[in-house]
Each structure stands twice: as C-alpha cells, then as structure tokens.
Length: 592
Ligand SMILES: [Zn+2]
Ligand SMILES: [Zn+2]
Picture 1 (cartoon, helix red, strand yellow):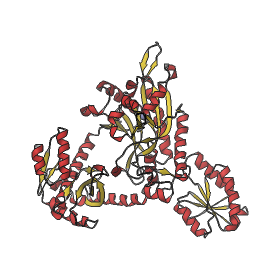
Picture 2 (cartoon, helix red, strand yellow):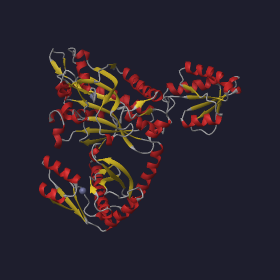
Picture 3 (tube, protein in one colour):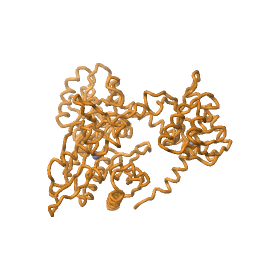
Picture 4 (tube, protein in one colour):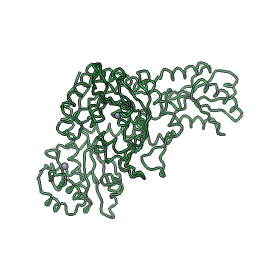
C-alpha cells in the first residue's frame, strides 16, 4: 500500500502561498502603523508565518499592539490586492532598498550566489521576495487568521547580530481549524517539557555551562537510563554488541566521511598545541567505521552490529535553541550495522521490530512510515552517484512493501549519504513528530573502503545501516515528557511508589517497608518532612508519582494498605504482597 504525496503537496503548497502572502500583508500593516520600521524576513512556518521587524526607537510594541496590527492587516487583505513580480538587477535592488539594511544584506547574498533578485508589489507594499504567493489577497481566509505572539529573534539566528521583533501569525483555512489549534496550544503550554522538567526535577541548564547544554539530575538520568536500557535489551536479543569511542577526532576522519565539507558550520573545531585540527563529533558513524575496518573481515563475520549511547555536539545558533528539542550536546542511542547487500533486508526488519516494540511500550501506538528519498534536482547536496541512489531507494521501498505497512514517500528528505525510513508519531494532543529512523548508507562504505572477503576470496563492498531508536535522547524526552504530561508509565517512572509517613513516629516503620520494596526492585522514595500528610500527598501528586502510600499505625500493624493510584478518585485497598506484585508486573510487562 503506497500513497503518493503529490496531492497532499499541492494542497500544502497552496496553503504555504496563502500563509506567506499574509506575511506580506503583516509587513504592510506594520509599515503603515509604525513608519520607519526596518524589515527582516517573512517566511512560512508550520501553521502560519512570521515576519521580523526592527521597530523605530520609541515604538511601544507589546502583545496589545497585535490587535491593532491584525486589524490593519485584515483591512489590507480585504482590499483584494494582487501580487505582481518583477526581476531587477542587484544595483537597482540596492537602490530600492536603500533604507533597509537587512534587505541589503540579503540582496548581497543573492548576488554572491548568482541568484535572481525579484520584488513583489501587492497593494501598498513592495517586498524583496522569491515568490510563492496567491493571485489576490482575497484568497486569504480572514477568519482563520490570528496574530499570535511577539518574540525576540536575532537577525539570522546569530546572537552577535541585532535582536529583532518577530511577530508570529497563525493562519488556517477555516475558523474551526484555528480554534482547534488555539485549544491545542493551551494544552501544550501546560505540558511544556521545559516547565515539567523543572517541576519534576529532571534536568536543568546553567549559565556557567552555557545555553543548549542540558544537565541531567539523578531523577532525569534514571529516566534516560531506563529507556536506554530497554533499547539495549531489544538490541542485544538481536545480536548487537556495545562499542565505545572518544568524542573528538582528527580533521582527516571527517574529510574522508564528507562531514568536514557538508557539516562544517555545525562542527566544534579544536586546535591542538601541536598545531593539529580536531573536531568534536557531531555523529558517530565515521568513528564506528574505523572499528569495523581495524580487521580484515570475512563474509562469515558479517553482519557486525555496533551499538553505543553517546553524546554528540553541534554548534547550533543561540537563537535556534529550544529546551531539550534543540540543543548543542545530545546523547544518541546510536547503532550501525555493517553487512552485505544481501543482508540489508533482514537487518532492516530487525530494527523495524525494535522500533515497533519500543514505541508501543512508551505509549506511542501508531507510527506512520515515510521513505525519505533524495532530490534528483539538487544532486549536489548528496554523496555518491544517481545509480547508487536508485539502487538504495529501490531496496528500502521493497523492504517497506514486504513489511506490509502503509507508507509515503518524500523527495528531498534523505540524509546526504543515503535514503531513510522515518517513523512519525502523533502525541496525545495531535502534534506530529518524527521519531525513529533507519538509514541505508551507500556512501560511507565507499569513502572508507569498507569491504569483506566473500566466498570466492574476493573483496566485496559492504553497506552500512544507521539505526537510532530514540535518536537524540534529549529530543525524544522532550516529546515523551509532553506526550505524557509528565505522568510516565509505571515502568518508566523514576519514582514508582512515594511513601508518606503520617508523622515522625511512623518514619522508622515506613523506612523498613520501603527497604522491602526496594529489595524487590521497585523504585521508591520517602517524604519524611515534618509537614502535614495532606501537604506531602499534594507534593507527590504534583510529582505525578504513579502510586502514593500513606504509612500510619494501621499500615504498620499489618493491615491492608490504602493506595492512591495516579489519576483515580478512590483509593485502592490491597495487601502489601499484592501491591508489590502489581508494581512488579507492570514494570516487567512494560505496560502503558
Ligand atoms: Zn513573498
Ligand atoms: Zn550513523
């Protein structure tokens, strides 16, 4: 079962044109209301658009100003302005934008890249723009439009450049879609992983360490390790072995892999005292090839399956950082399979199984499958030859067909070294996320001359499969935390049972009981603060602990326990043994 994305893409293109055209009208409204404002850029984003402005000094812009701007914007939209394009020379363009320093910078860039320079006039407003508009602003659905918020944004995401004011707009085809989206945003705010990370004490950031560099607390580390151990358990059953590599490398490794050229902006580079150039690793594949290659391999040794959860480093721009979803240091649960072409299918399907099992156990029931292919019209962005790509893409397509699932294909989403199978899931408030990925690599084996000796004694080129399950643990956890709103399944919860002694005199007895739980492998914590029971229970509820056990005279005298179960009104009565067995079972079965 295979669906062409063409129809969908057409609709998406249309919507993108509508959204981007609205950005023009936003700029027109701002210029009308705040003459002298300098313009940045106004691209389409998911669910809408934004425009960056440098407001003149003294302009008092706040969330309240948005209503006024929105009104003016809608006024322009209703005037049914058309979009008329014209191509101009760089010289002419510089003249036209003589009061717009940011636009001038863009013109210079376009000129340097040898690209066309075009302007679009719509009603009162002309803008430097590469196009993608509606014919007339009457196509913009006014009822689905809302200016959403203001934010500071560095020009070009660079903290050394001026801070501009970004105005975000939402734009949907209908008012109903807009309202649904606003409701979803309300819900998203409540479960924002940055907020929950603090409340549940999972991770933190330090000004001294720097932005984009998360620090994991004991509780957060436990959460990571529980998930990572599970991935490892699934891999181990399928013949993977752990390897371990340093976090830096000589430049030459990345020159060979192609990362030095393709990834240069994002590499942290280091100069050694002996004058060598090193880099922090942005990924692990090149290092792993050297483990494969340190021995001559017979076909009988294959597949070699290496797994390692290890930190990677990427020089993201400060303005682009966001909580755990976009960071400068992140751990990957990475794995690479080195195998023969004839083994690719089996290895792919094994990884696919791990992905199915893992995502079900962490509460994501449905995974959409997307084949991410290269864009033949932009072949410079990739390594290798068209023939190699064709063969690799045919291979993953036939594997997906064999798996018997629905899948889509998307041009231009491949990695620069090979096509991918990407897995996309929906969270509990309807947002889509790309999570796991399996990648077939036809290029690194060439670049590193990876071979095995085959049955006839000849050297045979092998292939590599990249197989991250969570991918970046940081990014995965941001999705996981928000999906569950911090109320994790019992088997993943860092604290499964919170003990709450009624008073000082019950602490000793509670500790004894806690020891029993701990010895049975149950993760427990105790709140022995000198506070009221009500207070301590409220705290534990706020921590979203699955089970709360108040320990008083009755509980210590061997009577049945009263358990507060997360999300339940009534307490449950059961014996200590039954309760422990229940928590154990939920943990062992990894039930959601
Ligand atoms: Zn435009
Ligand atoms: Zn890799």
